[in-house]
Image (cartoon, rainbow, N blue to C red; front, top):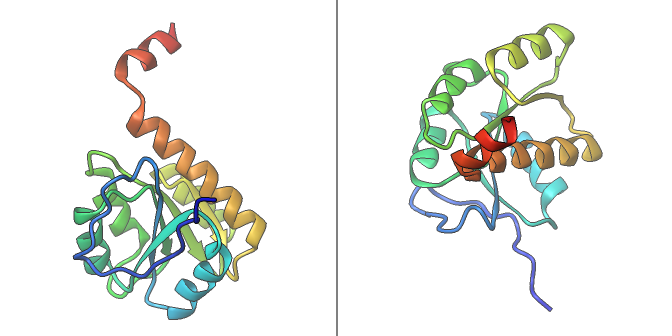
Length: 157
């Protein structure tokens, strides 16, 4: 029986070589409890988790690893999730962004989705909601980055 990969903390020097077979998520938050909570929920899954406390660390990880989904705290120090989104959009294989906040209200949800985020989740995380959102965000990323252009054109006809 094949052993499932576990969540792992990595430094910017670790490079993932086969992201299409490995579900990768980057947790970006200055709050250590956010990383621990996420790790507790997806710890026995096929997700490989990277974590960054700030925008600069997150960008370093994104440059060296192909990340499918980014889960980002609303407020970074310095900056916000919008600053991170601007960098993500410029990437050739932009990851899906899930914004998190203790105050995840309709206003944040509307703003995030209108600007290009995949989803908004309230903290503390609901296990079922988080896993659902991660799976859908990964599916979206996979379709956007690994579908040949010819198939997209023929599907639209």
